[in-house]
Structure formats: C-alpha cells, structure tokens
Amino acid sequence: MYEFDLVKPATLTEAVAALGEEDAQALGGGQTLIPTLKQRLASPSKLVLLSGIAEMQGISVEAGVVSIGGATPHGVVAAEVAQSYPALAALAGNIGDPAVRNRGTIGGSLANNDPAACYPAAALASGATIVTNARQIAADDYFDGLFTTALEEGEIVTQVRLPVPEVANYQKFVQPASRFALVGVFVAKFADGVRVAVTGASEDGVFRWSEAEAALSGNFSAEALDGLSVEAEGMMADIHGSKAYRAHLIAVLTKRAVAAAV
Amino acid sequence: MTKVSMTVNGKAASGEAEGRTLLSSFLREELGFTGTHVGCDTSQCGACVVHVNGVAVKSCTMLAVEAEGAEVATIEGQAAPDGTLNTIQQAFQDHHGLQCGFCTPGMVMSTAALLKENPKPSEQEIREYLEGNICRCTGYHNIVKAIMAASGQDVSAIAAE
Image 1 (cartoon, helix red, strand yellow):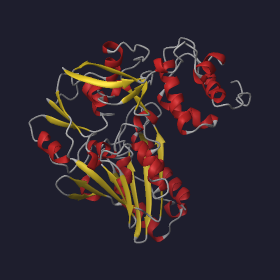
Image 2 (cartoon, each protein chain N blue to C red):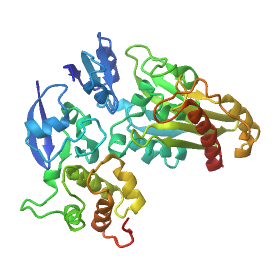
Image 3 (cartoon, rainbow over the protein chains, first blue to last red):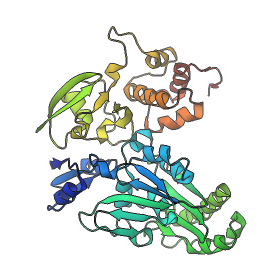
C-alpha cells in the first residue's frame, strides 16, 4: 500500500468537506478498497473513513419502505430486515463470508458498483432510491456501467430506501472462490408490476430484463418465462463462464427466483 | 504515525501506526500478538480473523486506526491464563481439527463468533459459517466435528468421507 493520510470525520458535513480535497477517497467497510489499495490499483492521498458517522448507521422500516444507512454492514442488514424484507436479508446474509459481512457496507457496495455484486440487483429490482449528501437518485438512473454510477466526485451514499415488494427472491449462482455472483437475479413483484434485475452477467453491469418483467407482470409464474432467453452478445466472459453460459443462467435463475418467491 | 489505543483481550494496549497500517500488522508487529496469522493477506483465507467489538473481522482487511478505542479479542485470549484450553480449543485438539495449525487461530475465532450467534449449529450451518476460513490440511471434516463437539453435539452423525 502506498502511504495516505487518514481522517475520521464524526459527521457527514466533515466527511463531505474532507472529500472535497484532491485525490481524497471515501472508505466504507474497506472490503473491496483495502485489497485494492494493497495491490496498488488505487493511490488516494487521503482516505476519509465513513464508519464513525452515526447518522449513516442503522435501519428503519416505515410505510413499506426499508431505509438503510449507507454505512450499515451487510451482517446488520441480514439480521434486521429478516422480517420486513426477507429476500433482501437473504441476499445480505450471503455476501462474501461472515467476517466480510461484519465490515462491508451497503453504501460501499452501491458506490463501487462491482458488476458481480449482489446489492445493485436488490436496489434496481426494488426500485430503490439512493440518497446522497446532495440529492436523491432513483436506482434506474443510478447504475451506469462497470464500477460507474451517477455519483459525482466526493458524493457519499448516506442512505438507501428500498420499497418492499409483495414477494421477492434473489437467486445467486455463486462463484465459489470469490463468493461474488457468477450470475445473480433479483425478482420483485409489486402491485403495479414485476421488476427483474440481473447482476454478474452483462458487460454493462446490472440491468433490468424487461422481457421477463413484461411476461411476469401478466402472469407471475415460472411458466410465463418459457421460451424467453437473453442474447449471449453483450454478456461477460471469463475463465468461469462464457457469454452463452451466463445468458443461459439468467433465464434459469429467473425461473428459480419466481418459483421461490411464489 | 499516530498513537492507536485499544483493548486487547481485556487489557489496554497502544502503539504507533501509520494510516495504512493493517490491524493484523499492528497486532503482530506493534503489540506482539503473533497468534493472529496472516495467510493470504487478500481477505480470502481467514487466518487473521479476530473479534472487534464482539464481531469477527478479517484483521488484514481493516486499518489499525479503525480499531481505535475498540475491544479486540485474539486467539491469545481464548485459553485461560494458566494455559488451560477453552472448550473450542480442546475440541479442536480432541478431534484433530488441525494439522499444521496455521489456519487455527482464525478457525477458533470464527467458531467462537459462530457459537455466540448460534449455540447449536447444524453441520451445514458450520460449513457455511466457515466459508471465509481456508484450511489446506484437514479437509475441514475434523474441524466441523470439533465444532459440533464444542457445541455439545453428537459428532458420530458426521460420516467419514
């Protein structure tokens, strides 16, 4: 790791000010950023720790919306939304491993927007609102390709508001070494329609599978997806799976998610 | 360099750390708690698992400064002061849950965290909880047995493979 200065703001205002400086970088739980720093793939001059900011911690449930502070670790989400949003709790409880879940945060995951991360699928399928220090961003406008989001330089995800679906399920085909999703599909059925978000698969990062959404909104059953498939073109390919394999997994996992959600 | 103070195994401890100093390095090199092992240094293997404020973390993937003021528990605090092994450690010994022993500090600390959350875990729950702890000797079987035993459960149901 290269050297850097480190600041521990106690308030969001202090954190925003610290991030205004050149080459400053926010550190959430550090479960991605610290390994990245070790490999010298990032070299910020200043790290701004978000873990000490009380207003970014904690979860509340009100009027069918789960609101999660940006610095809330996955393990806390898994434990605390088990009743209010079980599919989200199950997703959070299957990220990485227990020790990683005690440090990694929802805000960090969404700000990083790894193309194989789980939370982007939940946020997009739930039609979440990403709240930052400056504004509110609809999930549909937030994800912008691999490791890219609508966040401006120095903007912090302070809270994530997820409307709770009538039923939902997340199916993750785990890449066993990294524990990221080789492909992950989150299906969420709301009164006004179904949303299907896919992570781990596309070269453009998390996306909504609109054909499946249309089919499921008319008939919420696995059979409604018969004959639907995703084009292999545009999928990611690596040693673990080809484009065609990932495209195939999307349809399989979507069916499984619907079957499990009913 | 800044002064970092924390409580380690119930005793106050402090030392100097850079911003980039990892908690694992700080514990080992600054405070002398070399029982915490660094296997992979890439968050994969779990040999470095310690507890910070009661929850298991990978100390190679946390900065020392982030543990300022925290209650840290390491493998050194598991046995009694006279060296008597605790229930988990004794079960690992009884069931041959270690061979070279390199991963064992992390295995024991993860087990302690598991049993605090879930005093009677099933075999499946044990295997899932240990996803972040890698052992290259035992093939996990005896580790799972040891954890079943440490939680007061019958180990004979776990078939030898």
